[in-house]
Length: 398
Image (cartoon, rainbow, N blue to C red; front, top):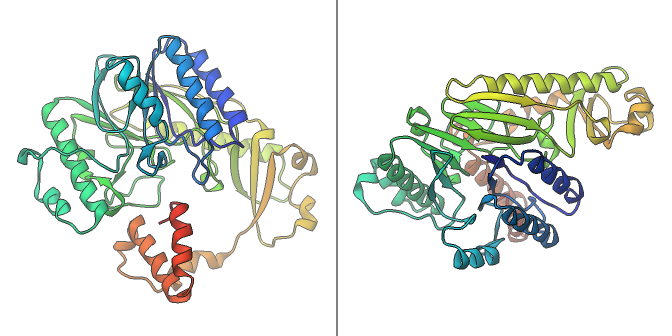
């Protein structure tokens, strides 16, 4: 099956991203099962024209007799509705067992002789009341006063149900894992962020595949992939692309419309420096994907770096764009898609030490960082707090 991860379409990226996506699928015409795995909307932009063009492409693939699975993510709701709600209703009516499936709730299916449990992001998680699927942890989550912890309880009860009813299972999900420090990823999350229980990582009868974290790694029985393109400069020095997956084996094909690269200033940075950094990132990613003892990497393809697609961030001691030619080769500057300077301040390393912060363990989760942000705004911007809170909720920071 061909796996298409977080697309995050916007009007700006659409002209590069959609042709790249179509070209890759056409180059693997032998793949009949195509899975579009959520987050079609860009973080801060709902561009209906781009979404309609993507929907039109779904129909083109449908006409080619491809089997499509189109799942919902946490960015893919307008109020209570899935962004492709109209298409879902039409195809639900036309073909109950058809070749295009819009999935907004847990679905167990079989693809290429492998049992697959799709767990899309759902604000109304289905839940089976059978006590066999409950544990003391789940009971406590279901009784919580926190809405997200209740959803986590329902989510984990649902997962327990499918695991008990199926001997071997591949779970393709769009959720965090509770309080787990993954390699190559700094943040951790909790049930207040809506998360799966960490015990799943030690279950030899299941495989977990996800991409919610936008960072690549392999950990125990968990393959975490990433978005189809770097959606912000926070994803610097990452390779993005597509996966083909079947029976515990996967292949990776690096293809992306833009590269965010960040590096220390080396006298006068030139094309050779940039290419060297890209090659280092490529080799590191390949080593990461080869490190799994459960999932086998079959193919790894990465093209040569296209300098015209690079947005370069240089870490420098002083921000001085007037003397940019001293730190950046003028010939390279003309080729780059864009460039930025970033002050490399040692003071940033001590920033967390200077914060007046609550319980250290709580700050290991994203939910508690949100609480700290809200507390800070209430103290320092009391009169404007409600306005700031509304803006941050629109941006999905809170």
